[in-house]
Image 1 (cartoon, rainbow, N blue to C red):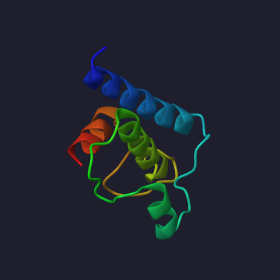
Image 2: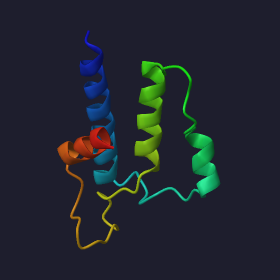
Image 3: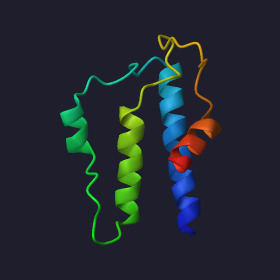
Length: 95
């Protein structure tokens, strides 16, 4: 199978899990982590070699797990109503 296809399927499955768990009321608005905690979760050192597909998927998972849940009913912001999965995918891919 194509690596790009696998990556897209993984991202969409993660988005689907996040959105459906919010609808069911099983997620919080955000996790209460300090900047130091986030530094431990994500190593932003520039490597001297390429990273594996599994490492890329892990970074995506950590970013999604630690992001503010804009689909949560208690997320109040004049610019957001709820998360649109295709828009979230575009944001992830662009950044």
